[in-house]
Image 1 (cartoon, helix red, strand yellow):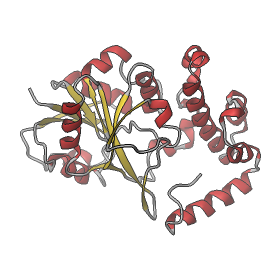
Image 2 (cartoon, rainbow, N blue to C red):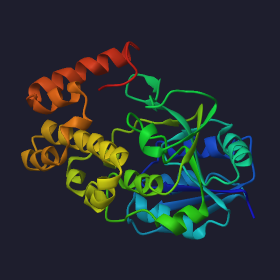
Image 3 (tube, helix red, strand yellow):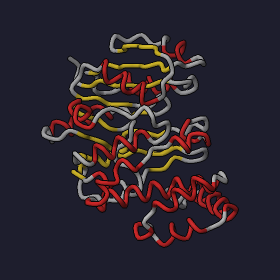
Image 4 (cartoon, rainbow, N blue to C red):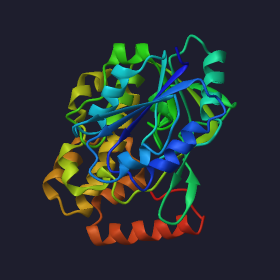
Length: 307
């Protein structure tokens, strides 16, 4: 039995999949199986994948069902006790699995392990910012406390004991964008996270990413399933309000007044900074200007992220 099962869902990533595969196959920790799930790709992804010959690769092809469906399929094929994912356009540094195995060895009673990432934009790469203070190389954190800026569980930079999925369930196939956030909330309600401050993966910019498409705004996750938990968990409520704030800003930017009104009413303003409360009230044209200005500062490395 391998130590890790690595699952890669693939849908039309012909320009990225070779780099992603190389980053996995070149890991310093080699005891893993690699489960590739081709989710109905219509480009040359399959031919790019079949150029690789490695006994650790297990290749599957299925009809398109979305990222959640592909990840869930991969989980059913996994044989290891620890499961990891990497999206087909992201990148692991060579020591990712080694560092995850080390953390698991140090904290054998924990079930979720993650690490810091760096984020690629069109013009610059910057380290993700987290909402906790660093006190050591490894932290045992509450998911919501630690994720008010950037989630400490990134799909492409975490490892999970398979019992986690038995407890919280698999990815929700009804959600086209935000299915990972839905999963992390369910995990965060049940488990702490062992978090490494070492940057071990890169979120790679892809302008064709499904999460950027306007039509998926209506199919983003529905936070109403957590309304009962919110009442007794203020950290969860604040985390959700910050996510809904992001949805509201996006709706305003694409002139979706109906969704903006829905998102706007759900937010408890006390959970937002003054800056975010002001942004909610600004007209679209001002928001667009401020975003472009922030992105300019990011490209000049004068800031680490747009607001």
